Length: 193
Ligand SMILES: [Zn+2]
Ligand SMILES: [Zn+2]
Image (cartoon, rainbow, N blue to C red):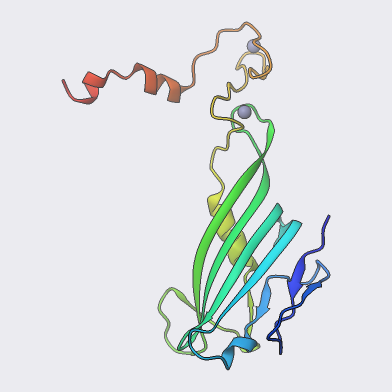
C-alpha cells in the first residue's frame, strides 16, 4: 500500500512532494499561498495514491487527480479532476470487478462573509479547504447503479445459481429483459403504424 504524496503549500511557491502520514488529511489544502496573488493566479496540485480510503469509508485504488486552484476577485475557484478505481460487484453474476470512475467538478470559495449564491462556499478562517468530502461525494455519484462485468454478462441461473458465463447448467433461462426489448420490438409499432 503506497503512502499518499502530499504537498506542503504553506509559505511555499515551489512545491516539493513530501510523504505524509496517511492518517493526516491529504486533501486539506491551505490556500494561504494564493491569497496575496493577483486575480487569475493559478496553481495545480497533483494527487496520487495507490490506495486510499476516502473519509475512512470509501476505499479507492489507483487514485489520480489534479486540484486546480485559481485566485478570483473574492476568493478561489477550484477545478477538480479525479480518476479512481473501486471494487464493485457485477449486478448480474456477482463477480467482483474493478469499476473505473472519473469525475470533474468545480467549486467556488469566497473570503467574504456575506450572503452567498448557492454555488459558493466560505473559505474557513484558517485558510484550510478540505476537498476530501467533496471528492468522495462526486466519485460516488459516478458509480453506476447496476455495474456489470461485461456487456454480454449472462448472469446467474435463477434455478441453481450457476454463473452462466462459466457454464450452462441446462436449465431454461429467459433472456434478459433489455435484450428482449431490443430484439422483439417491431420497428413499425415504434412508428405507430
Ligand atoms: Zn457479470
Ligand atoms: Zn441452473
